[in-house]
Image (cartoon, rainbow, N blue to C red; front, top):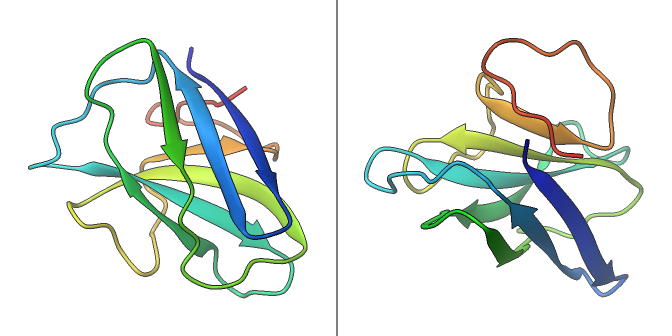
Length: 108
């Protein structure tokens, strides 16, 4: 099980702390943050990142546009460089409830 925690301020800064996330090969796929806001139709890109080793990893969130009224945070697995809008096929979710499928990994 992976664990993540969010820390930041209302200045559009923050980071996630992940524990025991699966290591990814950045040539094949990258993790991508998403900020879910009631003010936006689609989740907001929070940047791409890689997990190079197991254990504890601290990753800054790099929101591409201002995010307000946040409802949830998410992480997807995308092609290298990320995407503008995810199809959310390979995803992890924090702060929302949903029925998990075999490809999902929960963030507690």
